Image (cartoon, rainbow, N blue to C red; front, side, top):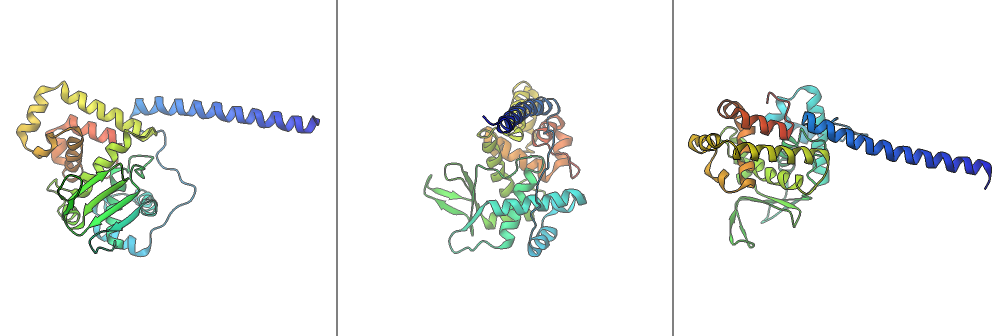
Length: 275
């Protein structure tokens, strides 16, 4: 072999080996860091920034309260993430609805808000957002639905009438968008292995263990009626319901159930906007 080619081959081989070793060392380091501090080693990184349209920015600034209470740096990150989320999903209207910029922006902003503490925030479990004008009839279980998350079809579905009502009334702990995206985030974390999913899974396990080992807390939860009864249907509904409370009435949540609140904040890495 030509000495120069041989040298190039050796250099390429050494660089490749070094890259693999460093990559594995970083993965190990980040896992240790994440499970110690309950957050990713870094949260935001992007080669190129995505931009919203002027119309989308106006909708966001006018309608979405969570965005308004972020600081300037966080708002910039939020806009980038929102633009990416909108571009990443297909929006489909049913029963005569044509998805508008308002629908796309507000539905997507809800997802971005809930995953704002995640590094992987696109919720890969879903690639379609289906919008009905109002509650719709489901052929699957033969009943009317306001919304649902369907992993098999990689879709999340909303009644726009009920979605709007949920975010317009911001303190009644009833928010269809938060509830359904709560299901999507929960399911997504259990089928993916990125660092944010790992942190969520560990946090959810810690939350369930906490409740299982504290009978008085469980009894207080039920007696308080702070969380609606639907929360006690199963683990999935429990998370989706308490997520609604966590977002809409955080002060009341923290005051009444501080340890449960701390578990929620930790598993979502929700360290902004006063939470």
